[in-house]
Length: 320
Image (tube, rainbow, N blue to C red; front, side, top):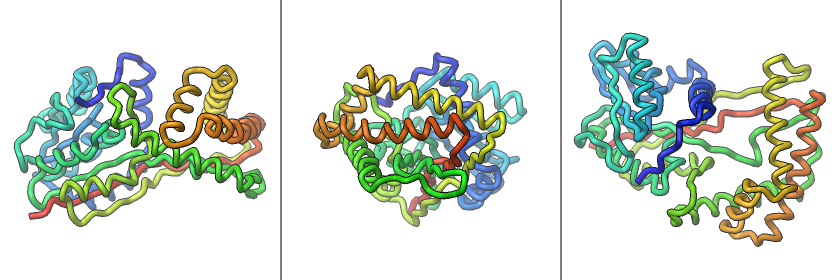
């Protein structure tokens, strides 16, 4: 079974509506449409569609004779997506149906293009979903997955006002690499434990492996084009976002100090990834001294922040 997210909280719904448009620039979405060879009359499927963001971006490329079907397990999101389609007057071309990624309710070879966005990161067996997406795609059609590729070492990057790098010791860089490595191994091992909540925010780079396993060919992987640069003095909106980020850092540091739930879960994940509990605690302490420094620099607008959208886009063609 696919794990169902709880969308009853308004904050989560707000984040879903806010974050999707911020991942890509508009011209990049147009480039993806060309890479998928979208044209009038084609049929599109969107697995784990949520509010139908991809559908609303690509439907114009296949009209007036094309169509789109979005599948999701959450009826509330499907209801809102249908309402949005009615508002823009294209509900006849866009359908939203209940369906799970491991058992998509569509016949074999039904669609010209099948796609998903930040779906595989929530699945314990993402290769099964990719295999099912391949099944419902016609021979010669495309399968596309847009997945998170968070890199704790490189994203975001911070510089001082004069453009120089922060003075990071080799030990700190090594600590960050150890955290990323252990967390990924921990994710892999927790796939096998159905009792654990699952979300892999750094698996985008492995999507080509799953595509190849499903039998897709002509694989190509691209990185998202959206970057944000925050330069002192910060604008009002940048200052507001910075304040929110600093607040999150402070909250995490307090959680560590009090050995709160988030801290305990992080230790558990790192231990599952092969670190001893003592080693995990030592690394987290050293890395979060760096986070404390970043929070202080951000508060005083003394740092330049460079951040990327953290998305890998993999496209494969179904042979035949």
